[in-house]
Each structure stands twice: as C-alpha cells, then as structure tokens.
Length: 591
Image (cartoon, rainbow, N blue to C red; front, side, top):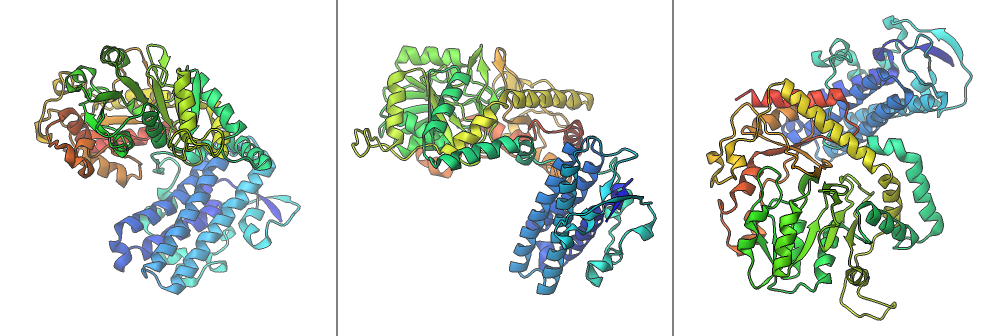
C-alpha cells in the first residue's frame, strides 16, 4: 500500500462515496410515495448531507482529535441512513434491488470513514493540514482488506481526476455520480467556507467522545463488581451530588419523576391535598401530584424568568394546601426568599423541582438546598445526564432522608420487613458510575453553556434583533388571547438573568411574535430547536377536571405561544452559533 498526500477533502474516497450516496438518496426520495413522506424524506436527506459535511469539516480541523470527532458524527449519520433505508423499504418506497444497492453504498461509506478514524488514531498526528500530512490509501480499501496490516511507501497524489477510482469499481452503474449530480451537491458548492453544517439541538456524541475512556472504565468497574442496584457507586454519587448542591443528604432514585413522587410520599401527601405549582413546566411536576390523588393548584409565572410568580402564591392557599413546588425552569432558580417566607408563615413544605437546574444558584445557595427537599433528574439530555433514567432527592433533614431511602425500596427495612408502602425507585449502579465521571466536568460544561449564551447575546445584538422586554412582559402579562400580546415584529427577547442568580442554561429560550417563520427558517437550515412547552398544564386534556380555561393564566399561555429553545450545549462552535442567529434573523425578517 502507498501513502498519499491529500490536499482537498474532495479527493478523500470517503467524501466521494458520501457525495454519491447523497445524490442517490436525493434522487430516490424525490419520487412517488417517498417524496410525500416528508418526515422520512427529510430525515434521510439530512443524515446523508451530514455525512458529507462532517467529513469535509473534519478535514479542515486543526487537530486529529477534532477530525476524529467529525468523522465519528459522519459514521453515526451513516447508521441513521441505514436505519431510514430499512424504513423506506418496509414502507415499499423503494424496490428490493435499489434498497440493497443503496444500503451497500451506505455501508461502504461507513467502513471508509471507520478506516480513516482508525488510521488517524494510530498515527497520533497533531495537525491535519500540513505539507507533510499523509493519509493511508488503506482507508480507501480497508473494508475489502479487513484492515490488514500493511507497510507504507510515500508518494504524492495530485488532484488530477484520473487519480480518483471510478465509481463503477464499487457502485452499480445506475448509481454512478455521473447519473446523479444535483447542482447543489457539486464540490464547488461544498467548499468548507460554503458548507451549511447541521446544528443539532443537543449533541451528546461530542460530549462522550471527550470522556469515552473514563466512561468505559467506570462501566467496566461496575461490570467487574457485578453489583447493579444501589451499592457503593450509588452511595458515592449521593455524597458527591449532595456536597455539590450544598446539602447534607442525597438519595439516588430511578428518575426525576420518581424523585418528585417519593418526595411527596415522604410527607404523606394524600388524596384531596393541594400542591401549589406552575403550569409552565414539564408534565412530571403536576403528574406526580395527581398520581397520589392530590390536587395541583396552578399559579401563573413571572413572564421574565418563566418561573412561578411568588406574588400570586398566597392568594391560592387554602386549608387543604400542603406544599409549594417551585420549578427552576431552564436552569435559573425561582425567587426563593418570598416563597420560603410564605411557606413558613403558613406551615407549608417546599419541594424544589430542580430537574433542569443542578448547580444553579440563588443568592449563593445551590438548587435543592433551600427548600425542604430538592428533586433532580439525570435524564440524558440534562446538563448532568446519565445513560438512561435517573434522579436524586436532596435534603438537609435527616429524618426525611431516612424516610425517602425506606420508600425507594418498597418501604422495607430490613429486607422483606415492610414498614411503609413504598415503590421501586432505586438508582442503578451503572447510571451512578457514569454520572460520577460526568460530575467532575459539570462546572466546565456549565461555563461552556454560559459562554455560548454570551456569544448569542453579542451576535443577536450585532444583528439588530434584540429588544428589551416590552411592557406586556415587564408589567406582567395580562393578555387573555395570543393576539393581545404586544411583542414587536422583527425582534426577539433574549433570556433574562435575574439578579443574584447563577444561570446554568439547561435551555436558551428566546421569545418572538413570528415563531412559526423562525422555526421554518431553522428547519430549512437543519438547525435543531424545540418548543418548551407548547400547551401549559392547566390546559392539558388530562387536567380538564380542574375547570381552568384559556386566559386564566395568561403569562404561561403567552410563553407557550411565543418561546423557542435554541442549541446551547458547550461543544457548539462560534460558526454554529452564528448559523443559528442567521437563521433566526431570516425568520423574523420575513414578516
């Protein structure tokens, strides 16, 4: 085998085959029933273009580590293409012959990409684009030779087209690039300066790549110990999270939802009891209340922070009220001083729903340490996320901590002797081991999210898109219908950081009048986004028995109609952030 100096990403065999695959996919998904299945069509096209763009962007990277990260994303996108091909075949959008040939092409791209990753990993080079940077021709045929050990001799490859193996050597004739060359997929349109990279709402693969060895070692540690439920890994995580959150005790449980449920069970919440909370939150907040037969009593939000409005709480207290459950939404804590004051005066328990807020602060105190209990989620998308479901309850009350430990294991102590009726709320040791690795990096990841938030603010300001929150927000939203809101067109309101807070940016949520146009612009540019949350809880069908109607909680309803979450994870590059802002600008200026 020979060594070859590659000077342009278009000369990479992996990129050439990826372009060929993309051309085939665009062609096959542009006709018949496939063309009408917009969801599958867009998914498979997006995944195919992601392969090309990541190979090209990786080539332009400065280090082998970054190159390998991009190639890893490209390889993952190959898997997405294969999965979507199977769906297309199952739905009879493509013939068996075309399916098999296209699948073979996708698999060849995956093998080529894997071969290049393997070569770069073994070469241990620090710089990719140097005059002496060489790439093994092995990767171009590695799928045929099964990565056989080879010795290399250095040669130079020019950019002459004749040096590139013709598609016919490994592709069916009707799938050759010469038959399928949409103009928007030609190399001249895919130079690195013109590439429009996809920007997912969250990219956990980038996070995992950086800590893979530590994660695998932690998993192996659990596998070697063969202790999978609770045990020393869970106990260690409990101590570490409690210390991180400024609490005396941490009790690991099976999910954030179960953390809320067991916290309510620990204070013996019964049918008919009332729990005051916010309607602008994930369903688990109110769902955990209703599961025990208690009544969620919804209080509107502060339209600037999206958290519960403390000034509206006291009016909803009745003789049946037992708990106030504030939610620290999007990574910023609620205004806890007045909440705790109200609770103390009325003899109420405060349970913090801190599912999105680990490490956030209010006047120097961490989420989960101010109320009687704090409830955390380790769902994979959280700032501290596991490899599945997981959660934790924190408290400074020894009696509550002991009761929660009892409840999470069916109320048994000792084994088979049940003092209480509890549940199966135990945390897995594998999740704890993964989370212990990640916890060490959490502050660095939070700093990355905060940097990205600052970059967003700068870019939005430079684009002339920002506006101070208008009076309909600063004075409290009283609109009873979406059309009554006065957000000006062509501008966006950025997240408001309240005084004396540490915002950890679980989400970066903007609000605007023309959300649908902005979403269309983001989708067209393959940029991830999400509405958190499109229907406030008081208007959900399952809570119709509470008797609330549209207009009852206007701040929550307006937020549901106007807000949009943008990518904020720490691995985002400045170019990706700029692409997001450019897409938002295109959407708001279409009005």
